[in-house]
Amino acid sequence: MAMLFTGGAVVTMDPEIGELGRGDVLVSGSEIVAVGADLRDHPGARGAEVVDTTGSIVAPGFVDTHRHAWQAQMRRTIPDVGDLGEYLSTTLAGVAPVYTPHDMYVGTRLAALSALDAGITTMLDFSHNSRSAAHSDAAVRGLVSTGIRGVHASMGPHFGEWDRQWPADLSRLRAVLPDGGLVTLRLAALATDIVGPDLVYGTELAAVARDLDIAVSVDAVFGAASSEAILGWERRGLLGPGLELIHATGLTPDAWRAIGATGTAISLAPSSDTQIGLDTAIPAVDEALAAGVRPGLSIDVEVALAGDMFTQLRVLLAVQRMRAVDRPKERITTRDVLGFATLDGARTIGLDAVTGSLTPGKQADLIVVDGEAVNTMPLNDAIGTLVLGADSRNITTVLVAGRMLKSGGHLTGVDPDALRREVTASRDALSAALA
Image (cartoon, rainbow, N blue to C red; front, side, top):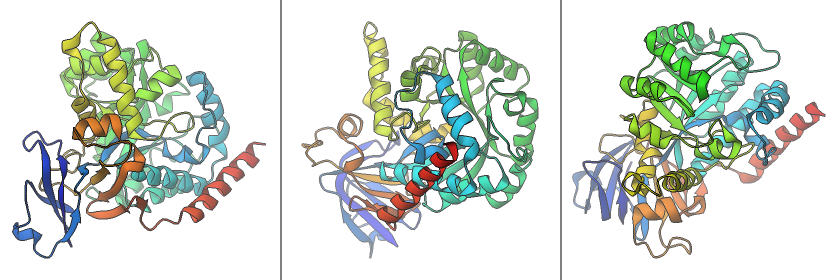
């Protein structure tokens, strides 16, 4: 089935195509076939379903490069979290050990549906509560059930009893999640010995990932200890494009040199870094750009933070421009932060050949944003509107691999009342187990 999105502003994030003040996007099956000013006479448009996007913006879906999705039913349980230690004690040492596989499914599914509703078509789920193979399977099932382009990044839990099946269980997961599917696999690890050496990235875990031909995401990368770890990884040849380092606050210049020289990817979590206060509490966008790295953006933990990408765009833009008030030539732009949330984010998690831009041949992961709503009208600048004006309520349509997952402003195939009952029951069971 072909679809022709016609008449709207088109923001491609493809440097060769650019932006169209009024244009068309042609989708056939799971792929983008063409982008142009007028595709009504394109051979592929014959018999296509026509979607009138006049007054709207067609753009690539956002890419969330790091979220702990399993926690979603415990949203805002610590809205005024004091620091990282409080998060560790309340969420990872407190509630995480009582999660059942069903709770993993419910939380992960809720996070993925919320992401789709907010225009996030790709989400890396840093699933660090893999207490058993059943917990991992449930998290994967939560992603698959929604139709999101998901990455299951598996890690053992920080605290509590668990089966110690990780990382050996990754080989089983690798077999059931082959490359090319909507949900793929990565190994997840920590930068330093916060809760024990078994979860720390190094030679052994790098070998596991290499043997399985999967990439690695490393969380809690900040400060002097992580800087030393990065230099150690450089000496052992463990840095490179297949490695994503998350947060990257407070790193030393030498660590940034090593990151830039090896093409290691960086995921920033703007609201997490600033609100929770991770090391310097300053998102390291200037440092990343100076090292030649264009970072991706991420949500992190909904127990304390907002769950949408619009918040990340605005926090990062405001913080960076505040820091650069005396360096106007170094100020990032709205186009920069939108790139971090789309194409650069896809590159961060190794999916830029598949998604992140409206490029013919890539998968049809796109959003349509109402540019004539009260908070977006009149549509004067499409990128400015996406970054500074729009929010989740303005996203009328979401496609992943050509499949319509949000239409007319509502998620397709989702019963909100049934979802609410399932999420509330899981939350209440977890609360009762903690009582």
